[in-house]
Length: 276
Image (cartoon, rainbow, N blue to C red; front, side, top):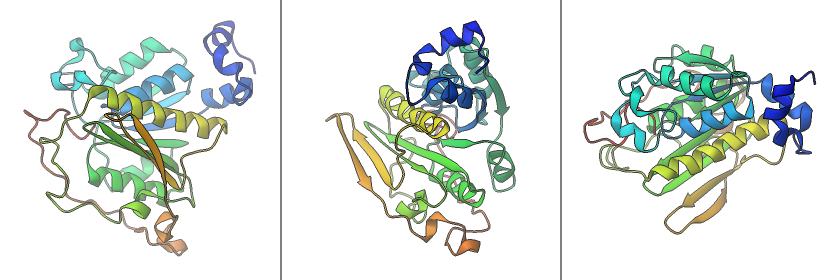
């Protein structure tokens, strides 16, 4: 596999796994993964992808580090308050693993830029805290035939699912964002910091499985958990026409829809700027 001695030592626990091995590790080093959101979910996602040796990690986030983020956003530290999250994330990842190249995207994804960005990556991980972004990522990945994983957390609960072309998508579960007031606003809802770590590491595991071909992905099912009861369960989801492009007979929009985002009271919000 042409690994250096340092790489053999660094990735030895992966190389020992029969479902990964040297071939799987080489796939990781050659892979490109996009993480949408450098917040509560994006932090453990990016950390474990970097530790695993994913060769290129793209980080999308338009915001700066706020003191309230540090309760769960482990990519960032006290000295990073006021810095761009993508710059803080890059610094942390570079200090963890010099094998990893970090590509920063310090702006919000919208209908004008998302498709050109995600098509440059092998897998997309969504870790935002707002419905418009979740639907935008879902629809763009379907239009670009990209595999991706979606995650969400609230208070003590989390849920995640993986989409590959043809499998159930986020729109197969939720046709459109809920009406205003149907779900607690970001300034009203809190989250136990460790919940972000639990779900983010599961999301990272899905990406590593996809890239190496190991195991069974969370396709056509949602994994949910309630940490108060420490109860995990999977719920089957039927793949519908919402899982494919409308031009191919599906119902996902050919034109991306930008739903209106709820305005957050950042002074009382437990996370800033659209990342959990």
